[in-house]
Length: 385
Image (cartoon, rainbow, N blue to C red; front, side, top):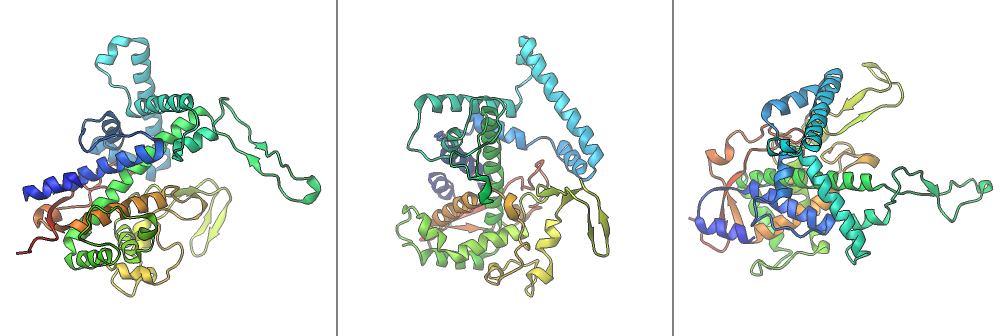
């Protein structure tokens, strides 16, 4: 909010997407792993820099990656080449130290090293009052490299017919790998979703005004520094519908939600699907299907369409079922709290061609993200010309 005040005072258009990236990275490191960073003021923070490198290879690599997802055999070849390059880089840096001057450490290796250091520091400190993700993982972590799930101490008798619960443990390697996964998943996807919400707000002023009125009904607009509570934000139905409608029109990772069937099955009027087939959901076709999302035009922005009960699998932004996005509630809460604070104080202004230039462009390997989100800010307590 301090950065937004600075930008508003300048009265110029700016790229708000960059601030969203720093915000989501600060948030996931703090809430997930107890690490207090300040990336809004330190844009060269190594955590931010290495995370951006993991998501921002050159365009050609991103295009090749997407194509290889569609062609299974090519995917295997590309993955092998990519892994081989990583092994060669590691070998050179490890056994020929002078090459460290010319060959950077891979971003994922650097982040995993930091994760291992965090694990050791937290273990030395012992149990803390923080109930963040790292603390929960440490409570389930074993020092063994391989773990077989064991039965709980309150094991049920065989004649009861009730399956005994398992005591599940994770290794240190799995803990550090999950830190990397949660950090990446909580950084790029949420910041990209916020940039799309920003685009919709700037290009749909009436909808923005309606959302601001909805926020004002739950908060005093004159107390702009009041922090929204979890309970209040959870009651804001129109805010929830606004975000969900944005993600319906702009799904963040449409190629990431895939499954592999373990048994053969048949689809009517199509034929047999053999076991082991990689199945990717066509999320765009699903989210724009008029039979599922009508009668209003599915290519127009209407948050109220979410007031009508739809098919449970019509909205696929976070996946569905037992393997849907584990961070969905966290991401939605994070976005809602940011939007409440932002829209209580400011109105986002459409900058014409700067805002509306080709917005949806493939710039990442797994996430369809804009290059930038150009807007202007205007304080709500100032008179509109």
